[in-house]
Length: 138
Image (cartoon, rainbow, N blue to C red; front, side, top):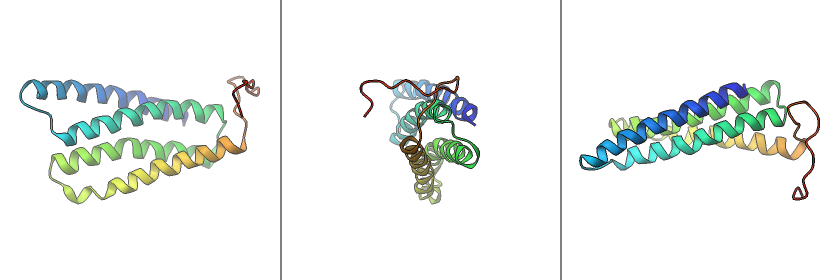
C-alpha cells in the first residue's frame, strides 16, 4: 500500500505541474481563476505529503487494516479534495462543494492513525532493525 501512496504522490505532483503550466498560459492571456489556484495548491501539498506518508507507512511497519486505512483514506482525500474544488466551482456543480468536508475528514483520520502509530511504536529501518536514536529525539 505504500506503493500506492508514493505513486499517487508523484502522479499528483506531475498533475499539479501540468495545471501550473496551464495556469501560466491563462495568466499570459488575462488571468487565472482563484478556484484553479486553490485546487492546484491543495493537490501540490497533498501530493508531497502522499510521498512522505508512503515512506512513513513503511518506517512504522503498518500492516493489515491500519495500512489499508491510512493509504486508502489519504489517496481519496488527496485527489477528491482538489478535484471537488475544480469541478464544483469551475464547472458550476456547486452541490459537490460540501463534500470537501468529507475528503478533509479522510485526510485527518489518516493523519491521526499515523500520529497514533508514531506514539505507540518505534520506526524501523528498511532492514527491519530499530532506527538509531538521534540526540534530538525526545
